Length: 342
Image (cartoon, rainbow, N blue to C red; front, side, top):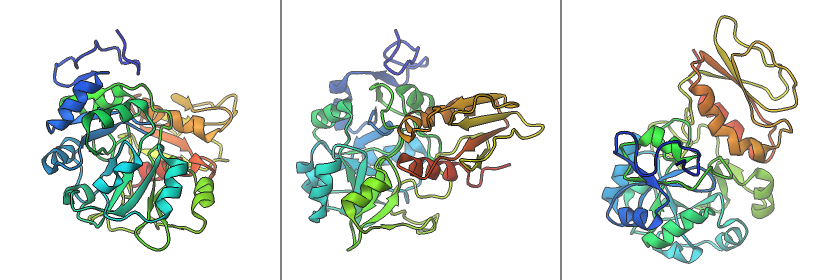
């Protein structure tokens, strides 16, 4: 039997019998209430979920991912009415954003409540919260009865998972159960907006594009790439200079550049657009011919994984137009390529 995400393993366990996987939401919720870890599907990427109010459970998330404690976690809620459980104040703008974007791929950084462990926020006064749109994530949140801290369910700094099979490949043996909710619809992490000051600040581009943010927020600022020191508490996840990175060195070309393989190296190409023939590459993954950023985003991380597992010496990636989700995709490419070229 195949899982919804195409995993050919039999339902129930990895070959070593260590991590269970399937579609049993009740079982997964029980694991979370008992302090365990669950791979959780969302519309953005799969998350590694733990009870956000249980410091010991949250510590397991950091250990399983190999994540430094200065990188905070996002807390997921089932409904906007649950905000008082994790935040101490709700600015008026939250209600307008919630009406337009929740459930959905928007995270808001708000003043945290005393109930939220320091480990969740890396000791910072703000906590990132969002309400996921994925139906299985919603059922899990309601069944477990607790807010869930859930970073991407992959080893720290690597390519984000968008199927249950990706979670099993990266964290099998370190997670108690992986819920298989099929491939993620959006395919790139949430946009993170801080409302901790008078002016909203976009900390991480993501599933809500800049054009939509401008409609909702009016004037806002964007965090500089060097806004936080690399070894200090980060304002939001995904802000380190190197992140979302394949093992294979990644090189970027502009959206309009001609793709050329590297002489003497097994070269792969991650691209989009209508080119009929691109000679010389050992492997090519074309996300879509039309260049639609929503279609490209849905397959982006899976494409990176495919190329990363192909035995290549280098991956050439065509950047996207700086529109809509293309902004978030370019951010992931730049961080994936930073410091990794050989």
